[in-house]
Image (cartoon, rainbow, N blue to C red; front, top):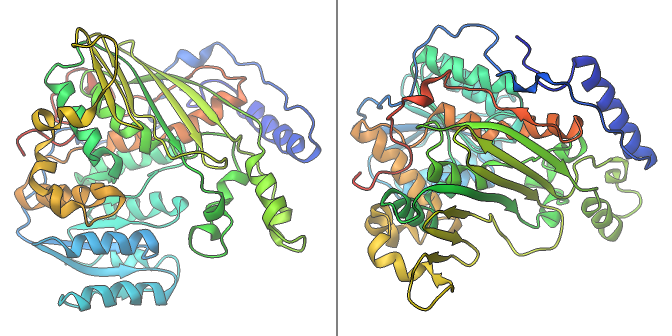
Length: 464
């Protein structure tokens, strides 16, 4: 069965060539007609042969031994969070830049911990790292295109693993991760820190306690002015502009989509059905380059293909809708939207506020803070003070605390491989929709039907 639901391979290749030509010449981009076969599910190309990972607990690990692949800014921030936790050993580190791995190792020894082994002999040295017997969990904080290779290597070596976002960039890679996780019976997680924010977990508790009534619609986004970071000559600036020259799509869907997916219980009685996507024209990166880059800069050879604002609509099988947006190249205050509409209440973030039907005072917003005394999530009640010293407002610390807790106590993780790939796959599906003239594109059913009857928990429980 075809796994390209809208267009033939020939049409996609033709569309790519036309898009490239349009980007160079400024000519209008042609719209490709979509066929009628988009309603066919995208099924795995080969039977997996493994067992479902829905609801599978970790084995208990009295001490959690973690290896980290990628020790740049993000990797070292994860090292800091782990060093604040008990019952954790950082046993190995890998990076293509030896100095970065050494800097992360110095953080470990400065905290009075045993020096980790270093793997810095080329970009594939992580394949040796994952074979070590003293590793329980492999964490990758590499550039995006290395996330899937590191996860697959870890799973082949029989290790649980987790990735920074997104976990995969193609539909094929998503299926490969599902297959490898099921075969190995090891968890492959998307380390989506935004699911552990204070507001997000407070709203999740309110959803579970019925405050919102019937859930109807959610809004998710990554709206963040990254122009200066994208054009740096170090760190993320060395690679993160690359995707903008390659594809027109939503390049970073998971920060917004993860939290609203847990509100809606995706893969626990519902799943994403199809997406419709469109992009605005590109301007932000081109104009920033003109304002900041000298004419002799090699960056003037780049052609930016990603539209500045990508707007997509997802419909679930149960008839809920999700607005999903992405813009990182224009001036704006930071927002992930993070909105939720139910039949009894509505929540809008930035700033976080809530309206409940029939509330005194009429139709006006009430700050979410006024509900914290009753609905703040137990994770934040327990470790919120410690979390304040962590990254991204504390959500990084809560995420790592919860991961270690699940591994130490032998609990089911808050999310699984099916969530990881469903939240990441809009990177590929939105591109297909745009190429098809904003045609609807089906989501693969990565659970292969198990979402209908799954009772596996999702998101941090109220009584961990």
